[in-house]
Image (cartoon, rainbow, N blue to C red; front, side, top):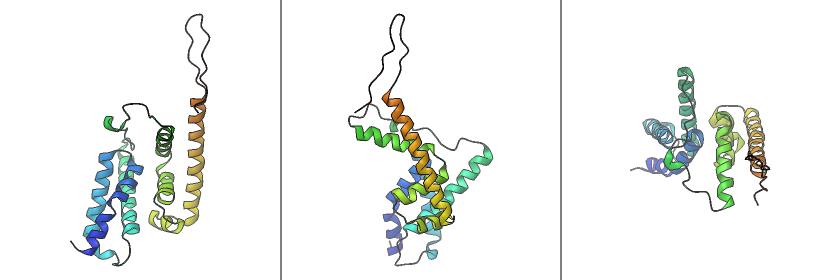
Length: 185
């Protein structure tokens, strides 16, 4: 295995994380990663030796994702798949951080794919605005707008979740008052 191939293989965990953030479905994400790696290995000469392949690979993956979404939209199929049974928590989280993390992931999945990709590239993968804009094929201003709108949308979704957790009115039985649950600490 040569230096280029080793550098590409080292990026697989990051590629899988990005693919999972885009697709949510483990099998579809793995397929996207495999398609990305196949394309990268076929076009290995397009990558400059000495540079990290990360930006190049993420660009390839994003273009494959966009192509996949276009195909899905033309066919009218659902673009987001539900979590598989094995991915759903079998028991309630023991720690508040796990619940908050799950809510953030669910909220991230609820926003548009363009905003999710922009936020993931910058906030999770650590690319600069300029790098992310280049990889996503949009002007920097458009990227910043998507990030700002995505953050606002996330904030709204998370605030709605917090409100629902804070007060839940349960339908009372005959002759009973409705209990009100206190906010989670």
